[in-house]
Image 1 (cartoon, one colour):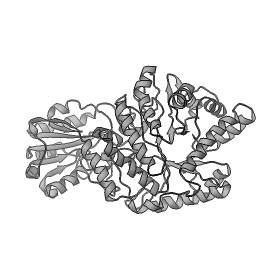
Image 2 (cartoon, one colour; image 1 turned 180 degrees about the vertical axis):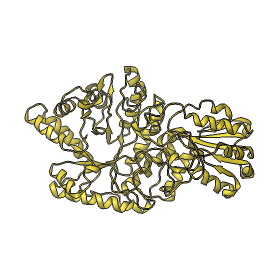
Image 3 (cartoon, one colour; image 1 turned 120 degrees about the horizontal axis):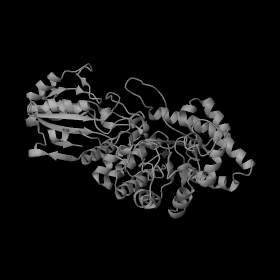
Image 4 (cartoon, one colour; image 1 turned 90 degrees about the vertical axis):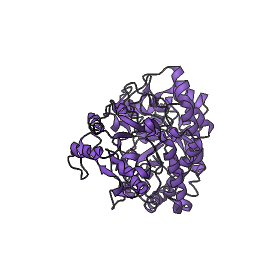
Length: 519
C-alpha cells in the first residue's frame, strides 16, 4: 500500500485523486504557517481535516485510510499538547515508571487530534556519539532501550492507537557518524547490541514497525532478506505491519544504486522484505509498479495478500471502520495537569550532576544577589527542547511554546524576580558575542557582571536540529564558548556549566574551569 505525505495531498481535490488510486495511508503534519504565537494545528483543525479525508475514502470504497505521524516527545504537531523531555532524558532517569507517562500522554494527545498511529518509539541503540539522532533514542545500553521501549509501546497502545518501532535495524551506528550513512557490523553486534530492543517490542505485542534508509554490510535494509524475513519475521516472530521509512524503496535506485529503475526497486524490495506500506511519499509510482510486476509475473499475488492482511488487521484493531477519526472523548484533556506533572517528573529525574566541587550546588534564593546568568541557551525554551519541537528542525524561540519556561524565567520565579540576579545573553550557539537585544555583544560587559557575582551560571549547548540537518556540526563545541568562559573565570567567579545538548559534545577544557556541571 502507498503512503502519501500530507504536503502532497494538501487539498481535498488531491486527496480525492489519491483515493481514486486506492492510496490507503497518509502521514506528516498540517502546514499552517504562524497565527500569532501558534504554529501547529489545534485539535479542531486536525479533526476537521482528517474527517474530510476519511469521508472521501469511505465514499470511495468503504475502507478508511490510516494516518500516521511523528510524535517524538509528546504530540509534537498538536497545539496545546505537553511536550515531554526527549527520549534520551527518559533514559537518563533509569525509571520505566516515568516512561509510562511519556507513552500514555503522547498517545492520548495524538489521538485527540484524530490520529491513530505514532511512528515511535525509536529503538535504535546509540553507538556513534556524533550521530545527530542520539537524543531521539533511549541511549547506548541495549537493556535500557529494550525496557524503556517496551513500556512506552505498552502505554501507547493502551490508549487504543498503534505504536511503531523504528528503525529496523543498525541505523544508529553509521561508520562515518553521519545520519543516513551505512553501517558495518558483525553478527555478534547485530544480535547482542541492536536486536534486543526489537525483541522486547515484539514481546510487548507492538502493532507496527518501520525500516530504515541505510545499508547494513553493503545490503540495503530495503532489500535485506536476512534481516527482514530471517531475523524479524522468522527468529523474532513479528506478525505486525511494516512501513518503510521516507522514500526508502526508491533509494535502492537513487542512493544505493543496486537497481536502475523504480520498477526494479519495487520488485527487489517486495520480493526480499516484508514491507506492507511504502512511504513513497508523493506519487503513485509504487502502485503502478506493483500492478505491472503482478501482470508480468514478477511479483506473486500471494505476497500482496500477505500485506493486505496485515494492513486490514491493523485498521480493524484500531476500529477505524466504526470510528474513522478517533479521540473525540479525550480532546478536553489536552495539556492537563496530569500530563504536565508526568513531563516534569522526567525532566527533574533526568538531570545529571557531572561535577560539584566544594558542594557549590544547590544554589538557594539566599545566594541570588551573587548570581550571574549567561549563555546561548539561558533564555530559550526552543533550544532546551531541541529538534522535533513544533517544527521538524525545532526552533530557538520561546514565545511559540504555550507551556514551560527558559532557565532565565525559571530562575526569576524561583529567586523572586528578574531584579534578584544579573543576566546577560553573552553569546549564541555559534559562539558569537550577542547582547540582550540580539546585537553584537561585549565581552567586557559580561566580565564586569561576572566579577560582581560569586556564582556565574553559563547555560550553553547546541542549536536545534533533526536528522541529517545535524550532520555538519563538529564534535567540539564552537571555540567562542571556551573563550567566553575563560574570560568569565578570570574574574574569580565560580563557573556553573549547564549543558543543553542532544548528543555528547567536546567541551575543550571548559569542564576544568567549572566548579559544577549539569547535563
